Length: 310
Image 1 (cartoon, rainbow, N blue to C red):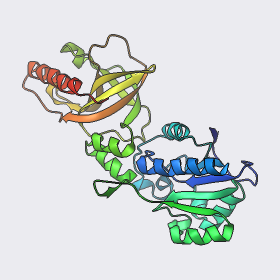
Image 2: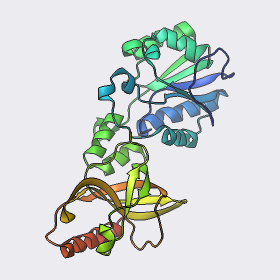
Image 3: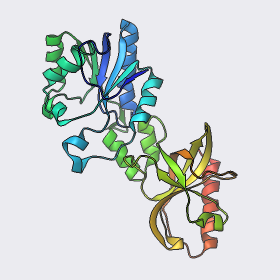
């Protein structure tokens, strides 16, 4: 898969005819994947190249910085999924106010037709293009006729009667329902983090933990709680119990992320781990004694290991 960073349109830049899609694709959830797979399928059927135009940062961070959402996926994470699906090339745009002010006709002409040689444009049911998002599917169909490309609108995917959207998944993660988020994402929610030196509370009570600092401050971290999940490093995946939030039993109000890996022996300081979530086990709470906390931690581990679904 070819990656074009900081992409700026120049006639003939990519040098081939394409099946294209455009979007932020935050989380690359199962609705996004349906679009991307259709792009790939159509490209195979027509002998064209499957391409994605996406953004370095979420457009809202430029249009309304105060309302910019935390993200489900980093750019690198999105690129990994694009490649797995079989996309041929990804063009990464730095979203600017100049782009925001472009009409749909300008964008289609400069980016999609003159530069990328777009023959098919495949987008979701709610896609809009141009300044203020004024070009909805009906208007895009008019442009398809004017600029001689095929427009395909992909119908939404629903789960439990609700349309799959990035905003819904963000809410699930923030409201402790990582299990529901994972169903809509198509894979278990995770983030990259670095192991840093902690205060050693876990080791003192017989459950050594690794303290984690998220690598990307823009990623959503699940709400405070104790979760069953996993860690992955050096191509190895291990079951883990993840605690997010304060440590009231130790009178620690600071919000921290700790992971305990049952039966693990080794040094993790400084390593970059992927931390994944399966389901929430319980709330963070204050125990009357360290012995009561130890009993609860043992129970957490036993409950999760008996049915980890990692």
